[in-house]
Length: 455
Ligand code: BES
Ligand code: MN
Ligand code: MN
Figure 1 (cartoon, rainbow, N blue to C red):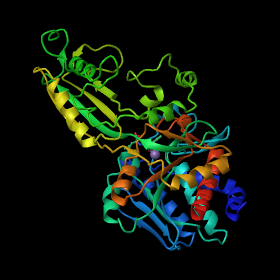
Figure 2 (figure 1 turned 120 degrees about the horizontal axis):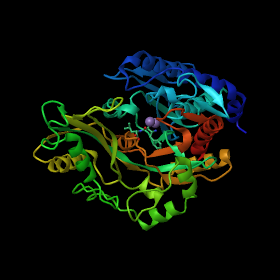
Figure 3 (figure 1 turned 90 degrees about the horizontal axis):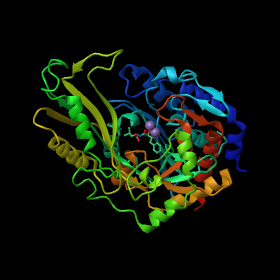
Figure 4 (figure 1 turned 90 degrees about the vertical axis):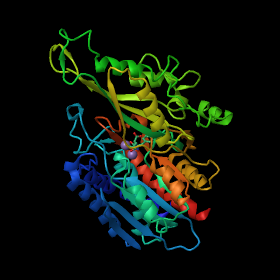
């Protein structure tokens, strides 16, 4: 075993303590009252790098949340790996559903429970500790390393894309390493080679100039909530096919090889249904559950509101109705184009009794990693050595839009080396992360760097 791997074994508990300190910081990016926590988390990471004697360690302020940057590039003849992660987290609500407070990490059954445990503090911190395992054992890091840890991933990385464009030369690299995805299952390490994009819309349907008595006016005046439901019902047909004209025009169809690779994955549909408490799966006709959840585009209502939702019954004909609607996109689809197509179609569905307003929230491009990319070999071998099983290659349905920008701006492929599980409850109450995977993650990252240097 290398000195670095030994160091990781010997400092297992110390690393957990440190991760807990990071998890105690409520760095929720969407909550403007949490600005201090955002800075605290950024400074925590900055200090970590400062203790490692690297070439460059710097906090970049942006119009939003700071970017933590670290660089150590001692080699002329070794590849450069850009590690990306995010220190911001989703809000913890609904807090009453947590069995322990979201920002007071606790260990139960070998897992740490806290907001951000898996997404993405726990996962991204593995690489910080891997770097440390070289620097603190008096070794040189085997490859050139650059770190970019942002605080705005959960709000669509509005300031990271301009940062990439502006610091293209500084960030130049041979590949990007990201741990912000999931393993296929417990003890089934996976390399994710596809992520979906996103177009996120908000719609408003407006009827009468005020809420009305539903007895006095009901039947004679259009109800915007009824209309909104009818319009939403026209967005998909009974086969789960999205009805927005042009929606599928640019979708790159799945190849036979894509479909075979997906079908070969050890997916257990019965266990899937049981884990979700559902009797049957549902989705686009002609595709499997795995394909529907990772490689095909979707359209979903995320929230809908309007009218009376309080206690008891209030007879009211609401003056307006709203919904948030998201579409997951696959290679070929462009978020701006899809948003425009949606807007046109949705507006066309409105009867002349109401006014409709469609606005667009942040979106993102889908991405796929080229499976012949040489960096994947070192990643797969590192996984195999640490987990003692070959990793799987799978596409995932979530979105990390910056991955497409790494390709576009830096020309770099991303290696998505996830250590989380789909059952980690990211974005939900009781988020958790396996401490065993935290430990194995650090070892896998360090081994990856060693193997990459040899390749
Ligand atoms: N880490 C997730 C994305 C993810 C989760 C990818 C699981 C693959 C498997 C990321 O932090 C996230 O939540 N992304 C958002 C999109 C973003 C633009 C807010 C998402 O997927 O909803
Ligand atoms: Mn994430
Ligand atoms: Mn997330």
